[in-house]
Amino acid sequence: MPIITLLTDFGTADPYVGELKGVILTIAPETRIVDITHGIEPFNVRQAAFVLQQVWSRFPAGTIHLAVVDPGVGSQRRIILGQYAGRFVVAPDNGLLTWVHREHPPEAMQVVEDRRYFLPQISTTFHGRDIMAPVAAHLANGVKPRSFGRVTDRLEMLPIPHRAEPTERGWLGRVIYVDRFGTMVTNIREEQLRPPRGEQRSWEVLVNGVTVGPIRSAFCDVAPGTPLALIGGSGLLEIAINQGNAAKRFGSTGDTCLEVR
Image (cartoon, rainbow, N blue to C red):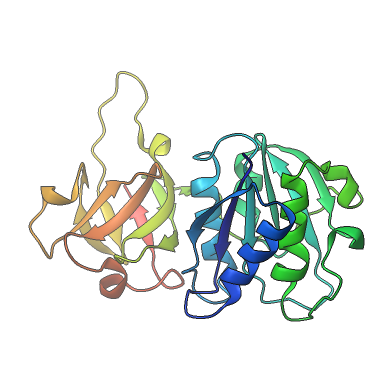
């Protein structure tokens, strides 16, 4: 049974998610549909790109990820069908594939353009329903990726630093994602913090020049209301407050300076 996941900024109060599912099930009724989230902040392509990468390899090979965060809908921006690590994605070419593309070598990439696989009537405001959902459904039915359009090797990428920058004393990082608890996920990777074999190293973490101490193992290592740094489930350094909101304490992704030394 083919799997199609849905990742959107549509929310759940409107009919939009239901329309996507209805189109998919009409074309490919045996498909299993899995909701990743519809709670992406409206138009926040950067947030969606991170979430897509986090779930990418958690699904079995052959999964089709349908990602619709599309502030440029109706414009000349392209729609892409990509294949990475044996999984597929249908998404607007607006940077949404940045993290997946950086983490996994592309196996195939087509521009979605063959109208035979679209709905007969196409709204300029809802390409997710009229183009992307039917393409994902036809792909689930076994249509080959090359059938949907020409091959491309060009992809729009977000200007997100892939890894933290080395400094004389350690690393200078950036916050790349904030979850619903206010935990700030950075681009400092766990492997960057491992000392060379045979060496011992204790890191100090500073946020906007304020120390939050060493890297901890779990939230409960500090008292409630206390900030801490730890390696999260993503394998990235995170800044959190035990039972609190670090983003409100330290600022948003655009104005937060993070240093490990």
